[in-house]
Image (cartoon, rainbow, N blue to C red; front, side, top):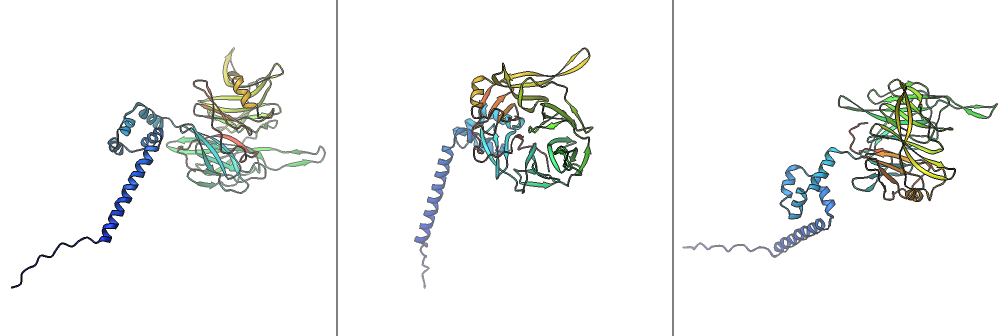
Length: 400
């Protein structure tokens, strides 16, 4: 009778044991490196990461460590969470020709590099929300494009009816019944005519408006014949477009609803040079240099005010703020006497730069304080003659 022998338990293969041991070491090493990585991150960075977690994940993350539990329960955390959810902070967009532009993020206190759309012979002309308008300012241009640089979306618009050489371009956003649309205003000439008698160029300006809701251009009233547009991009405020004119300096407005141009009835400040316009909370703001007592230069900020006298309205530029002399000296030291100012209102900040500024300057409208921004990635070698300071909103809901 054969006895049933109990088979010995199979022993693990040495090679298998080695592999398992190696895997455990790798996992342990990865966990150690991951823990080391998180422990080396600044508390501010960890806090910003935790801000974007869903609610269910935040509950779990409180049990990771005491430090994270403290962060998720701190007043600072809830304050910044409120800012993210209720206060959109646009970027100061400094754009030029070349491979990239840059945008300053006030919440992160840093510059972001943004690749420019690769469209031959085109550059950025205007911005609104997260939409950029592109075209050619130095040659004939009947076709414009719009793009969202963050989403890498690009759309070519249909040709304009008459404008061939652009003098002024601007874009404005609209929201009707949850539909986010935009309109583009272009003022320019159809063709240039050389007068052989006086050997000068004679041109006639036209205005065209593009509406993204129907995808068509329409003609509007012609710009004022005596108005020569300056380099300032202009601003939209309460349905009106304001822009600087030159020789002499002045301001003209364009009413989008009726498509008419009007000269602003406000006398420009005395001895103003290199003026620029921005819009802040429904107010038109003017920035420029002035010379006082024939020698003292200053940079001042004015606010457009509408006062009533004897039953009539009177538009005036009232001084709002003056740049401190110590900041003015440092800001203007590398500049030529009439270097144009590049200005844009971004949230509660007024950003000021020039072609030669190492660091842009920012003025806070609320507490009336000044501060220097970090040097931008474009300075000095990446800047070109076509340098603009605009406002860009990365979280805008506008669609191409």
